[in-house]
Length: 283
Image (cartoon, rainbow, N blue to C red; front, side):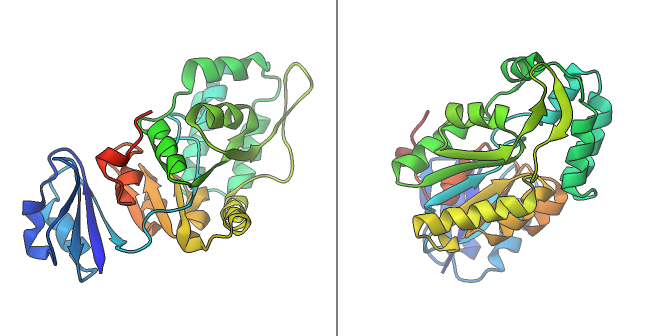
């Protein structure tokens, strides 16, 4: 048995009644519900029926939906910006560096080389720019704290795994409520950035390794994991996770992920797992 999970303002099971194998389970009135279906082809039919509505519709297995390990990307997933692009703005180089970031996140450039190129362009940027970027630009995306608080309250372990930088991941992990974080390290001379990043670079392979090693350490099967991200460097972990979610993602990731959230905030990941409104910890 499968479940059509529908999320969005005005979500109404009546629109999809012809596809149902049983009555809908309301997760949040007029916003989210589960509709049991027997055939996976119901997903295509449901998305066609709702083609003019701002609804996120995904097909998930009815069993084992609540995951015990969350591995999340940071930039443009848990937070609202790409930190490297905002650092570049401090150096007057945002247009140049953001263009490279966009291509890398679309999978048009190899991640490690693109990261080193962009970091090299920031050589000489004062370290004070990192603190200013964090305080002025970085904000948690809506629903981040509720996602973390709810999954933690139900016994899940949470990891922030980013191709970005430790200065930001440490602060974001604490603010959002992650158990742990992994990221790259920007090198400096005590005053300014040197234009280098410590080796080895954390990219798509390291994100996959974090998922696999995290699951192993917890004694979990990969089917018990959830991974979420928005760019090409998240592709490997998204494919490997029991529930891989493309969040407001680039086309290359959205096409490959098992589930996609395009219209709603991060609490959608809770509804995807079958949490009801009453179970969500609003933080």
